Image (cartoon, rainbow, N blue to C red; front, side):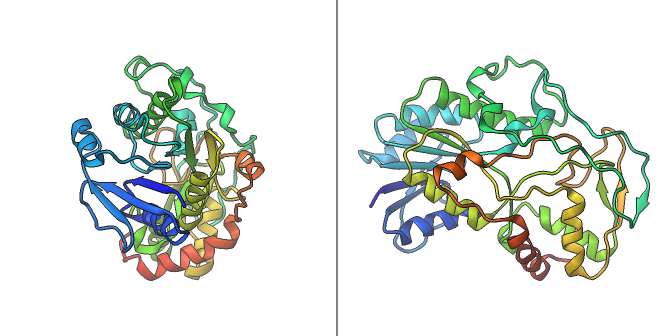
Length: 330
């Protein structure tokens, strides 16, 4: 039995992680701002993780075998956690994201973009296919070697995407530059499944538009991206908490898909084909249409012993539950 603290853990795959760890016999405690009561058999601490003194008071003399940090988004949050949990935990697992690899949010990095198209609606498959580059490995990015926050110059591309990705990169860097405890960053693929629990609404976007016959905005030659089922990610985080490896690790199901393959999978259950609208350079496309490559390689985690599933096996179920819960919005 391990003593596990989950920072966050009140919704989606974080909630599933908490119940998995509890059911496996671990002593689990959740720390959040009071946003939601934990399930039965799970302890609870209430504090704002940004308030260092309040966090120390809430923790009191407690220590843990593992801390799983579900809600670390900035280097400031990482710095507070690093100071507070130094000497309190034997292992720290941070939930990061594949967006750290996104070339569109990396300053001074070339972006491998698809050709610029002419906007046109079509029910036929998007004709152009992007090249299939090698998936990115963990070694593709060392956050500790990136410029410090505020020193990278003007952010490229979409500001909100940059803020999220750079926040995660810099948070990883805080833990990696001067380690205070054994540290793991789980770079999670795009998470799908869960129906109404999937609060981002990204899969519901496709279900609603295709069901309504509304065009889906895509790039002319979209690149494949990586996905993971929400329960698989919860299982992965639980597994990572029990291991001894350190450093970044990619978490993605086998079988990267581009946006048109995703649309065709939705269309198979909706009953009619998707309508596409190809966007021009710089225009916003739908959530999983990408004009650059950064699908992930999951070889490190596989070699360490985690058995990933295949997107093709769980995606139909994720679409079906989204169909049951998604409203009629387009």
